Image 1 (cartoon, helix red, strand yellow):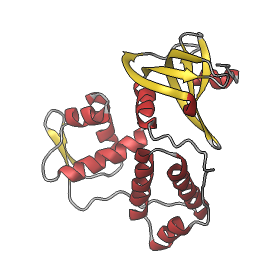
Image 2 (tube, one colour):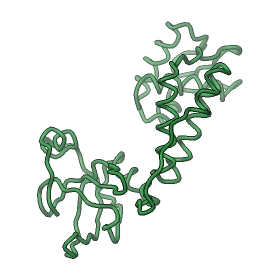
Image 3 (cartoon, rainbow, N blue to C red):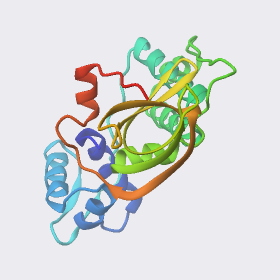
Length: 229
């Protein structure tokens, strides 16, 4: 989570907790950062004018009447947001589609009426071909990518060959009507692309992995590697 997003969420957490105090420990656990990071974030918010009272070890409260500054977007930026959300609804799993709708609702809430209408009525739309592989089971894969957990997949290649692989999932990419899972394949010791529609079985393993030089998605991008399965 980026710091800018975390600062907004801290303010929201303090607002929702009113009138009770929220400790740095609770917020650190919620946002998966250290207490020291929360202390720095609180100090930054206070220095920026947020009316936060409290102290380390006791807890923090947000005085009533404070709100975040209004969001200012150009019409072109609003069009981009609307198109992005519509693309997610057309190609993403149910969780992502719901998250996109919720994100737009939050953005709308902080906008003037003219901008709300632009966001709702942007004349840009997204649709996929009928044979699109809708990634209904992608939530576990997304979680595995963010949690750096290995996957066991049973895969049928375009040549009809069945194999079982242990892979490090790195990214999901939509290419028109095909979704690809980019991963580091432990069997091939190389990067590989797996078509989602050809993965017959997928299991998220308890085993985790750490980023290693030469095995990250950034390495894949830099090398423009296209492994064959």
